[in-house]
Image (cartoon, rainbow, N blue to C red; front, side, top):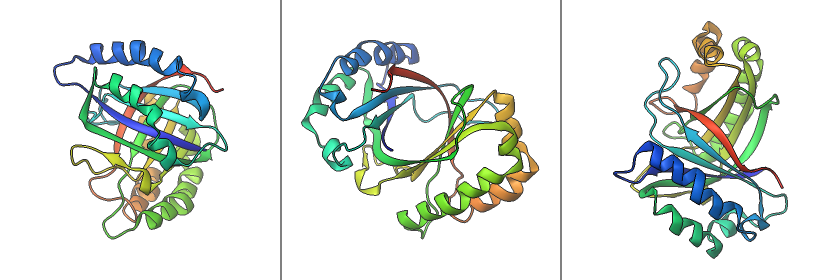
Length: 235
C-alpha cells in the first residue's frame, strides 16, 4: 500500500488547542465533503502529536501528521502530488499551518509484525547514514532491520504491531530547508510502560540499536507519540 504523509507545524502565534480545533474541525470537513478527494483515497487519518514523555520521546518537532492511504490502482504518487485538486485543501491549511515549515512525501508500507492497532501509537523517524543511497538504506531497513525487530525478544513480548514505511525519494516536497526523513517506523503498544520496557531491554540495545548504526545517521531516529484520529474510515 502507498501512503502519503504530511508533517505539520502550527501557524506562528496559534496555540496548540487552536491548531487542533481547526485541523479536526473545519479542515476535516473540507476533506471529508470533497468527493473528488476520495477518488483515489482509501482512508484519511490525522495523527495528533502528543507531548514528550521521558525515556520514550523528546520534545516534538511537529504538531500533526497527515496519513493518506491510496486505493489500489490509483495514479502514480507524482500525479497525485501535483494534482490541482489539492489546491483547495492547501489554501485552507494556510489558516492554521505554518506553510514555511512543512514536509510531505509518499512511502510504501511493509507490515513486519501484523497485530492490532490498539493502545499507544509511536512513530520513529530515521534518516539514512551518510554515504548510503536511498535504495541502500531502504534495503537494509527492510531486509535486515525489519527481520531483527520481528525476532527481537523485547519487541516480540511488548509490541502489538510494527509497520515500516519506505520513502519514495522522488516524491519529497519540503519547505524551510528541512531534511526529510527516509522512512517511518510505526509501533503499537498496549501502554507506555510496554514501550519503555521494549526500548530499555538489553536485547534492544544489543541487537537493534547496534544495527541502527549500520544504516541510520546520527543523531538517532526522532520519535513521536501520536493520537490517531480517523477522519473518514476506509472506503
